[in-house]
Image (cartoon, rainbow, N blue to C red; front, side, top):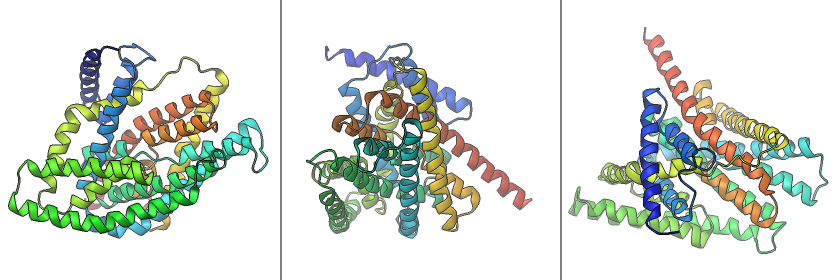
Length: 397
């Protein structure tokens, strides 16, 4: 493909994403909903104006990295420390319940499978896909609502990061039975080493940035170096520790969230994300959707897959949040906030395809889950926070 053709695709994505984002905002829905719908509209399923490409996939990856870096910058570190143990329990429930639900769903459709058989691991892998949490859309929705720094928002972010780590460990164990190259024990050790490294060098990086910030306050060199740190930790996480790059980006934001110019770094990062990388990421979810080869039986499985996946996250995370003494409405917000799937579910699914644990025909169900959860989550969160405002108004009356 000629290199200049990508410029046409970028122009179409930006115009359509921003137009439908504004329409969504006019309709009192989060802008990300409109941007995802724009991607579906211009993608291969409908108008076919833009085709998914490696270049767009890489741009979308940068988009989600910037979004998670910004989320880390806007995190209240003291609140994060308070919610850490609770977030761990919520994440554990958010992995176990969907893993069980997905396995049972596959067996309900295709019959039971003896323990240790290939069919059994295929069933378990359907559950593994359901464990994935992609909090980037929830982050953007909470930012639009002004609720990212609250206790609920911080808990969702913390739980999602821990969820990804647990999910990677579970994925590696399941794949380990299929691929002789996988070493589950190595992944556990690598994960622990990554966070140990982050704790050690994170403090040193924080001190260096604090000194630099005192000497050159509110200058562009601060966000430039912050962005470099974001990309470097994202690379280190994936390359040397086998952890999702978005986890490295979020950790980079956490390291810098307490320096004086953290809000300035976040503002400069958001500018790049809002203008280009964010719209490409959210539109790419729609671009990946292709429903040409879907028949009745697969569609029925896909619908049940979506329902079970969403309910398992809400029930697992919501009930655990309730047990951790959140009120009912906040528990529901946490459950809903954890039900989004995106790039993590796609990565897990593609890994399953490569090792023979997932048939290509089920990829449609994964795409449908990503689409439905990405659109439904922001809308439901907006309604729940609106309900919160109504209750506060009634209590003050």
